[in-house]
Image 1 (cartoon, helix red, strand yellow):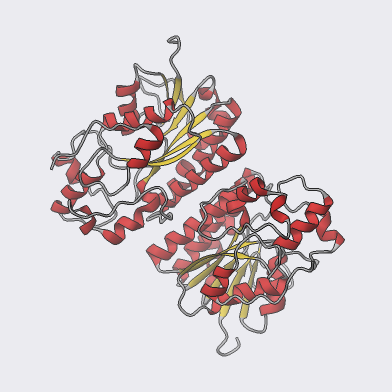
Image 2 (cartoon, rainbow over the protein chains, first blue to last red):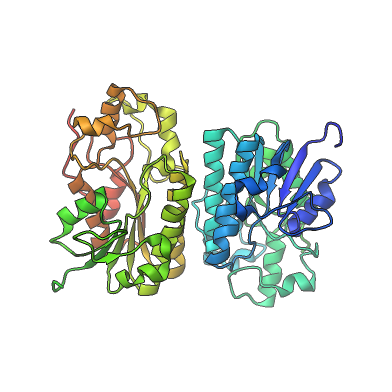
Length: 263
Length: 263
């Protein structure tokens, strides 16, 4: 264990975001990777749905948990939302409490407020559209997945206020393996619940893109924040078309994105 | 079936609130009572945790569902919150959708925002304390029970916006079998998470009391509302000490409480 480095547990470390964190934060922190199935980089193999006891060993000595493990697709049916997003998230917060982990960074999602986009698209994607939704808007989940993220934020709020954890909820935009919002493979997948034309997909991805290093930067801002106890912030790069607010993340956490989707 | 009367399904009909609705709304509507165990008044016996199919027969032909079935205590541990409040509530909304039931009245709770009270008590209970929390405050659940109610409201929001249901979330105060906020047996039970003195309990119950007929009146206002599609309102009688807002319920739904805790 590297002297003086914070120990950061990542749940769901095998996913797209987990890989980005391993790539960009591996030097800064002592990363502990939890995965559901064995991987070459796994520190612990456990399923968050199995229970607090099943995952607790991974939490020992951690300064922070970055909770990414979940079914990540907006179309996920209830049968997977229940174990992976609802039950598993409770197990993670409860394990953090029992292990005395000070802070939890929770991968929430823009889908917690997705109905604003459903209502405002596709005009919302235009460069000259002035609308921006911030952390103070009323929740409007667009899916059972979105409901599970509202629930996770409420669970975090409870653990913050009743059990003293510091909790950071990240309403993450579009992080992709191909780290380029103009890549054909990125644009091939429909990124939303809406039936978008190819041109609208291009516009949307330029608005919602979060580069892999900016994703890592946002997590770093949470893990290093000296005094914030509760945050709900959006995660996108410094995109000209952005329609989710990042001013609050900059001000509250010192989030400093380096990337900007090209126009 | 009475001609022209709305058919209203009550889940959890055997509880305190279910009994109040059966007593005060039995003439106004055709009530359909669902209970987990057989009772003399049961129309359907089913456990909401068992699945959509298990409860769906009870929803046939209903104009509204009043969803009361849940573990009702603020101290309820996770093992019961999960089936009774999280899973069961999804089943109820999904069954309403599949059966084509137009509206759902969801028994939420003040514990969805309970931390405001935890923070402000016991001064909050005083007659001259001016603080009132309304439906626009940020959620601050005080318990896993409170988290389950935030989740239920988010689920309702999703079913309202994506599936066209009309959803009414009632953050209910203190409804008691002994319908008197000064009764010794009512005051004997600690009504909150706080360690209150007998005098503080008396004060609180005068603030949070919801009489049985006002509880029924609030449900009536939801079931009869001609045009409201979404509501989050508090349920208390017209108490001088009230610290949860009822002006919004009056204005939006025409809620007209008849009772007032004595001073």
